Length: 163
Image 1 (cartoon, rainbow, N blue to C red):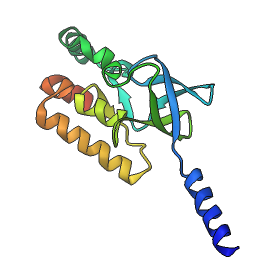
Image 2: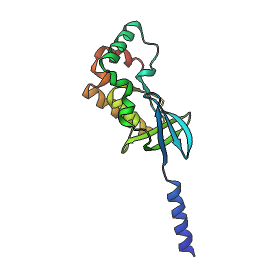
Image 3: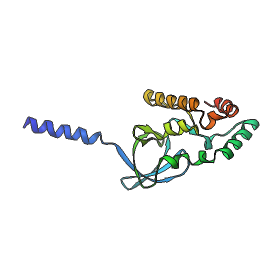
Image 4: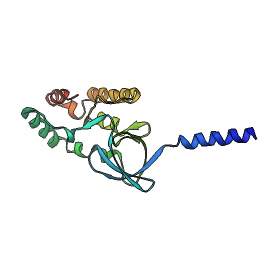
């Protein structure tokens, strides 16, 4: 009887640890996605980053550089669509304030992938040390490879004020 109880409790723990799976319904922007979780709609924003299309309040010179960057690298507006495909299931970690971590490529989150492409900047509000470490590492990779905003030194200095 005790063995049966032990087996049932282990199975209950395994079921509790099951990841949240969501089906991607739409990509609204690089930072906002709409999922379906158990047939219920759920909209979330990436955790720990601000994408370049959301940046507001740059100075005039920086604004001109920003427009030039968008013309030179039009893929930056659709970077999320490179990594996520509609009607596919993704593992999600749902966080407060409609934030989420979307695991887009194995253990890598979409936030990390966007940072590595240089189309997002890291927020300093990441409360989880492990996630914050992974995001910092992604920024270092983008800087070393000179991707996205890190390919243009003047734009990098403008956005560096926001980081």
